[in-house]
Image 1 (cartoon, rainbow, N blue to C red):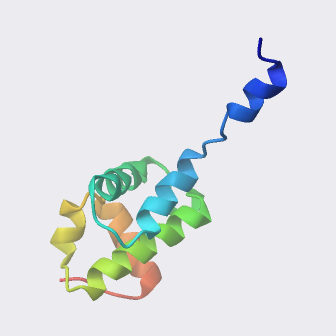
Image 2 (cartoon, one colour):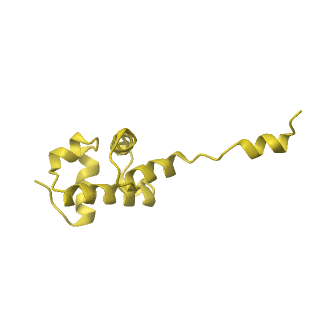
Image 3 (tube, rainbow, N blue to C red):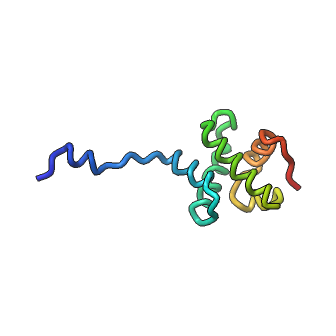
Length: 98
């Protein structure tokens, strides 16, 4: 018979926001990254300043990496980001995209 303590040891704390940030910070492209971009893009119902700072940093990092690889604004939108998120991230980065 398992004790309650043994059950708690097996439970792993999952932080969905941290998973989202890790996926966006990752340099690897894939289904997880695309899903993370779509999730971040869907967060436009919250004003940009109300998003967690780590998430904003992850979005800026990912968008900056896409821009550095020669991607245009249209590609950022196709990648799953909303126009509002792209606009704000570009403003924060002090960059523009064609």
